[in-house]
Amino acid sequence: MAGPIRVTNPLLDVLEVLLQAFDNHDDLHGWAIMKATKRSGPTVYGVLDRLEDTGWIHGSWEDENPEPGKPRRRLYSITPTGVIGAREILRERRPQALRSQHRVRGPALPGWQHLTQGGAP
Image 1 (spheres, rainbow, N blue to C red):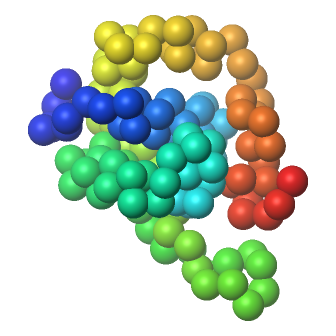
Image 2: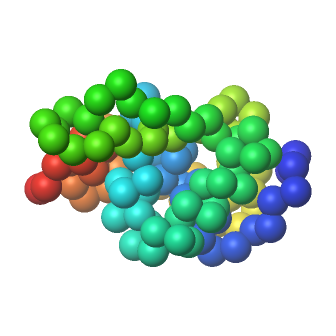
Image 3: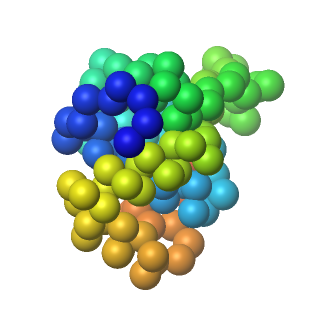
């Protein structure tokens, strides 16, 4: 595993969601990751900050929020290094997560489409 990443359950949850988004060719904003992982904002953003510091994810601001009157969101995507590292960690700690990702095509989480777009179900 490259980078000084402390492996915690929140980290594993976020990595699973980021890999699913990668498989679906999606970028995610923090709120979508919070909803998918059922973790609090401070927990998720702490993990995202650590992953971004190690180069496992890339964050960028969207030009404008697709919902009028809403602020721009920061979108996150996993980097090639992050994909390799995430798969390595999940293979060791949650092998069932990788197996289920390879079986599922399309949105893997209930309501996945509305989470990536920021709308309600």
